[in-house]
Amino acid sequence: MKALPSLFSLALAGSAFAGTLSRPTQTQVCLDVSGGTLPVVCLVPGSRLDDREYYCHCPEGQRVDVAICPAGIKPPAENRALDHARRSAARDGSLLGDRIGDRPICMAPRNP
Image 1 (spheres, one colour):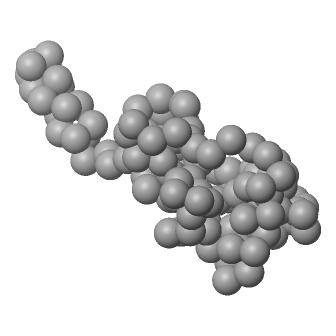
Image 2 (tube, one colour; image 1 turned 135 degrees about the horizontal axis):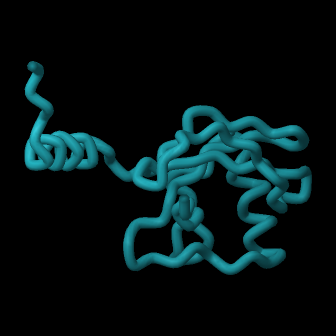
């Protein structure tokens, strides 16, 4: 007769798996020519614990990398000034490290 794994060993395995999941530091957005955001389509895992994104694509607009806001930092308010800053900063294909005034251009983390 085969011994079934104990609940304790399953809990340890689950916690080890959850410990390997790291929070993503960047994501992708779609920008139109004015710098405004458009809907992005991302392939994500089917888990509430794993908030990674495997692949994102833009049905319209330009796909641009952007940082995810660290804990305690809110993303800048969506307004014309942000659209203008994104439009000029996205010319290199990335918004990583770019700022609007004294605040970083970043996105809120995805809520699975």
